[in-house]
Image 1 (cartoon, rainbow, N blue to C red):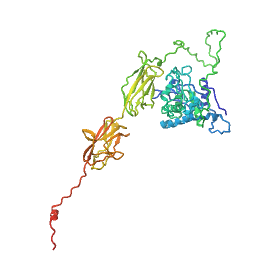
Image 2: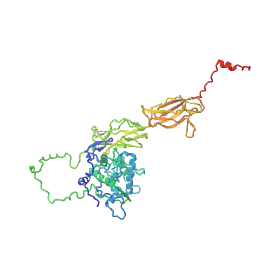
Image 3: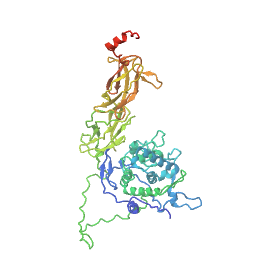
Image 4: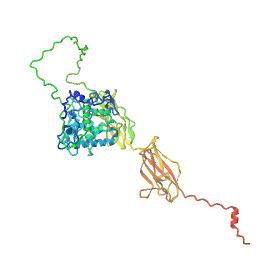
Length: 581
């Protein structure tokens, strides 16, 4: 059967795609919107949310290809002497593009196994967004031969997203455009971008980078894409449109039935787009004479078959001058103010106790509600927000304040910056400095109480084990040193007495690079004694100032005294033997 394609315009998509697909999809949940930990709007059902901002989607709800897959199942292995079936053509994916999808799936299986991302979903989105990067027109590294750019998102039939990257990604310093094989808008790529081909760059025009970024984007809320509800939510978060969801689902099911790779540059390129309005409206004509003004007539009585409902009340005239639009809350923001954020400091691996709070204000200092404020972690740090991302977008409250999610410190110590900006508004942001200190302990205790003794030249029977805590909690991964010191008042390394052995069996009396385990425990290597007897001290120090001094004794083994002979035995022993009779 020939491939079924349709010209799906904005006004016609609902009746075409939805009618074909709705029977194949499970009944959707009731529409709704929730705010996730990062303050982003997320649909709770499978309906698109009309108030979800375009900036919070991957594509900015940009146009997409609307060609439908063939009705017949694909044959993934056509023979050379049989006619090429349209299903075979559409099932083919250019080799480099297909490899990028499968590599992204493998990476997500390691990074987020609970997401269950199928590579066929990436293929379905790639088909709809760029026609598999325009039929595989990519170079050997996976970068598109020429840029793939969506239209200006200038509000003229599309979302209105002003420039956010100074044209760095899309070459447009006036408005944002969707970029690359997976059609990310610059503001989304800024935080979602990934390096999928390990070349040290995050390039939205590279299919490996874009496919991996799309995978992480679809898995970012802990969704399980093996369930229909989460799969629907993930697709709607990519482009907030029921028609888009239905179309991607059709391609997903199509590719699941079978596909095969073809050489790069030989794939088909779709022709129909959701912004194609050709023929949708008649060509306007200019009347030869001005139309006569209409004469008001009295309202007529309901006709048979009418429901008798009264005519709607006339809409009051707009107070906004013609050709202008009312300012949005975002338009009124003049500056950001700190809303009482305290010092930001945390130990490596811990969650910062303090959260960043900023307030959006007008020029007159009045709070502005319902404005999207973005928090971005900047710098050489592995710290993230509690969502696992380095950014968070939060809607300001009724008093104009936006509270960032908690920040979780990584293992890298030092300072980094959290920058706060207003989404869709070019004004000065706020920078907050945060500090990550090394893991520390404030107390050390021995896990046993056995006396540690040894004979000269021997080895101690028990190994020293200690437990580190910080504010009574387990202190794991804390750095420590152990030194056999000269005395309680002299912490210098001793030159005699007990010692450890290095890898070559040589005596060492200071151990560095020690670390407590996940339970805060540290077990030292076996101790040995030289020929010096006496009482010696082992001192253990940790980051944070915890100190423990352990006593070691080296003494000669005690010998049992000889039994004292009795008086009779002494007398008998000293008497001369009696002569023989």
